[in-house]
Length: 213
Image 1: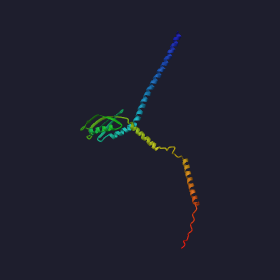
Image 2 (image 1 turned 180 degrees about the vertical axis):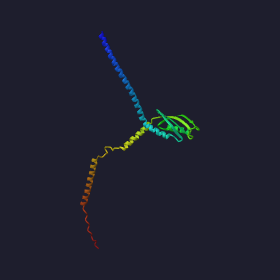
Image 3 (image 1 turned 120 degrees about the horizontal axis):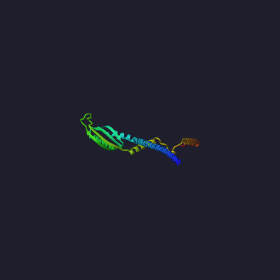
Image 4 (image 1 turned 90 degrees about the vertical axis):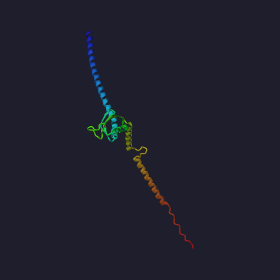
């Protein structure tokens, strides 16, 4: 009986050690899963930045073209796909024109005016641009523009690297054979022309008959 108890105690000790090892392995797996999740999140951020890189180029180009005269931007912030503009203008009409220009851009969506107020006469305010405004606009991916750019690039590459079809391409050996054949044909024609000119009989001059009176 005592021997069985001792054996069972040893088995319990062994099982406890194995359970501790399994617990350590489980904790290691959990740590690896956390690291994997962090790496996947970073990968998604990098892929998103890469996909939006060309879009941001077009976006800033459009922004520089949409600012009308009599309006100046003072700050720009981005949160996801939302852009927030702050600036000053000489009138509310300039702000309305700017909003219409933003909405007409293929890179931007609807523009929402958050505030606009006149600070005319206050210290530190430009008298030519007394209106202070803030508006927000959402960005959108312009897949048609990206596809058009990709098509233009591929067409340019094809035009600079045109290769003649194999059926119409003449190999150097074929060109040499064609030139030799043409030269032989010309020589043959030239020789036959000389022979015919040499063997052709020359007509004798007819005797002059004197007319009798």
